[in-house]
Length: 83
Image (cartoon, rainbow, N blue to C red; front, side):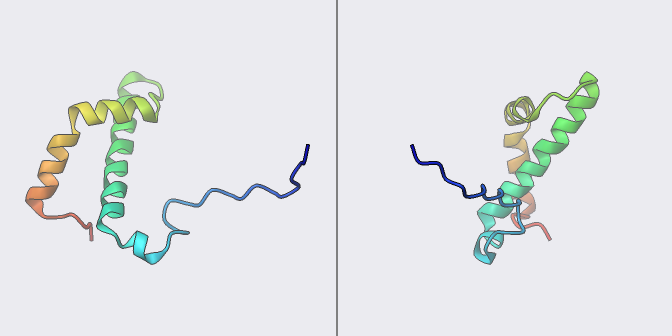
Protein backbone atom coordinates (compact mmCIF):
# COMPACT_ATOMS: atom_id res chain seq x y z
CA UNK A 1 0.00 0.00 0.00
CA UNK A 2 1.31 3.45 -0.95
CA UNK A 3 0.37 6.37 1.28
CA UNK A 4 0.61 9.90 -0.09
CA UNK A 5 2.14 12.43 2.24
CA UNK A 6 0.77 15.42 0.32
CA UNK A 7 -1.46 17.82 2.20
CA UNK A 8 -4.99 18.04 0.79
CA UNK A 9 -5.60 21.10 -1.35
CA UNK A 10 -8.16 23.59 0.02
CA UNK A 11 -11.47 23.93 -1.79
CA UNK A 12 -11.64 27.09 -3.91
CA UNK A 13 -13.83 29.93 -2.67
CA UNK A 14 -17.00 30.80 -4.56
CA UNK A 15 -15.48 33.62 -6.63
CA UNK A 16 -11.97 34.54 -5.53
CA UNK A 17 -10.07 31.70 -7.21
CA UNK A 18 -12.10 31.56 -10.41
CA UNK A 19 -10.62 32.67 -13.73
CA UNK A 20 -12.04 35.92 -15.15
CA UNK A 21 -13.84 34.16 -17.99
CA UNK A 22 -15.80 32.14 -15.43
CA UNK A 23 -16.56 35.11 -13.16
CA UNK A 24 -17.75 37.14 -16.17
CA UNK A 25 -19.94 34.43 -17.70
CA UNK A 26 -23.69 34.99 -17.69
CA UNK A 27 -24.26 31.40 -16.59
CA UNK A 28 -22.04 31.82 -13.52
CA UNK A 29 -23.69 35.12 -12.62
CA UNK A 30 -27.12 33.48 -12.88
CA UNK A 31 -25.89 30.63 -10.67
CA UNK A 32 -24.73 33.11 -8.02
CA UNK A 33 -28.00 35.08 -8.17
CA UNK A 34 -30.06 31.91 -7.83
CA UNK A 35 -27.87 30.66 -4.97
CA UNK A 36 -28.38 33.97 -3.16
CA UNK A 37 -32.17 33.62 -3.47
CA UNK A 38 -32.02 30.07 -2.11
CA UNK A 39 -29.95 31.24 0.87
CA UNK A 40 -32.49 34.02 1.56
CA UNK A 41 -35.28 31.46 1.37
CA UNK A 42 -33.37 29.16 3.74
CA UNK A 43 -33.01 31.98 6.26
CA UNK A 44 -36.69 32.97 6.08
CA UNK A 45 -37.98 29.41 6.36
CA UNK A 46 -35.52 28.59 9.16
CA UNK A 47 -36.76 31.62 11.10
CA UNK A 48 -40.36 30.45 10.65
CA UNK A 49 -39.47 26.91 11.76
CA UNK A 50 -37.37 28.10 14.68
CA UNK A 51 -34.49 25.89 13.52
CA UNK A 52 -32.09 25.59 10.60
CA UNK A 53 -33.94 23.72 7.84
CA UNK A 54 -30.75 23.01 5.89
CA UNK A 55 -29.72 23.95 2.38
CA UNK A 56 -31.15 20.88 0.63
CA UNK A 57 -34.65 21.36 2.06
CA UNK A 58 -34.53 25.08 1.28
CA UNK A 59 -33.33 24.37 -2.26
CA UNK A 60 -36.10 21.89 -3.02
CA UNK A 61 -38.77 24.10 -1.44
CA UNK A 62 -37.55 27.17 -3.35
CA UNK A 63 -37.47 25.28 -6.65
CA UNK A 64 -41.05 24.05 -6.18
CA UNK A 65 -42.51 27.33 -4.90
CA UNK A 66 -40.46 30.17 -6.37
CA UNK A 67 -37.99 29.30 -9.13
CA UNK A 68 -40.22 29.67 -12.19
CA UNK A 69 -41.66 33.03 -11.10
CA UNK A 70 -38.17 34.25 -10.09
CA UNK A 71 -36.82 33.36 -13.53
CA UNK A 72 -39.79 34.97 -15.31
CA UNK A 73 -39.30 38.17 -13.34
CA UNK A 74 -35.58 38.27 -14.19
CA UNK A 75 -36.31 37.73 -17.87
CA UNK A 76 -38.92 40.53 -17.91
CA UNK A 77 -36.58 42.91 -16.09
CA UNK A 78 -33.76 41.99 -18.45
CA UNK A 79 -31.36 41.83 -15.52
CA UNK A 80 -29.43 38.70 -16.38
CA UNK A 81 -26.25 40.33 -15.12
CA UNK A 82 -26.62 42.12 -11.78
CA UNK A 83 -24.81 45.45 -11.55
